[in-house]
Length: 245
Image (cartoon, rainbow, N blue to C red; front, side, top):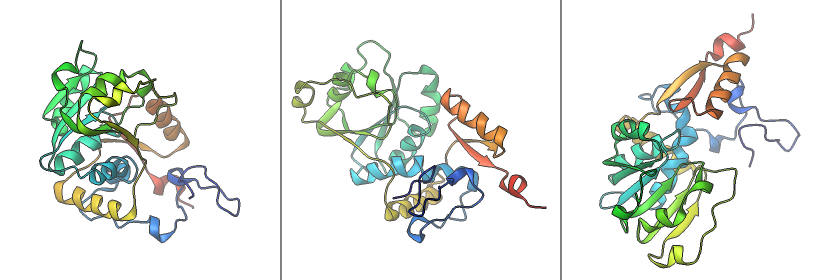
């Protein structure tokens, strides 16, 4: 597999991905974008969108299921929308009270602020599936999160922290036979289905656009690093920047 950014092809050339005017790709990894979706709003769906959509459909999330989305950011704001569109009862978990209103607008029935004391007590054995979109998992009290899973429930990681996961004991899993899993991106069929659902339900990424100039790219990377984006950047202005006289 050749990743989009800074990965090397067999001939030694480098993939420049979203920072390039054009990219060479195998036809299997190209997708028809529905006319109903605007380019700047659909662009993040090809990464954050499919990363959150795929595990939900693989877990058969739908009517009758209760789902929690952890972390209301670039990934989590998509996860809430997908889970809602698939018919599940959706809760959001966040350490930031400032994200509560956004989570409700995105479709969460209830927002759980995990910095509240004993926050998990009210939700023991509640969730069939927890989609963890946060990148601070190494700071989590995993026994609290796992206690909120229903019998046989799944805590699925798509947020990827730089640090190791917290230490856990066997007792963390024994009470409800909970599972910890993880994934990244999805397959071609899931991508097509996701784009169709997005067009039908008007599901879009919340984006800020920024010029793809060297200055714009540097600003975007720095603001993402500082968590100062609401909730994804889309690089625009390709025609202006790459136009040849």
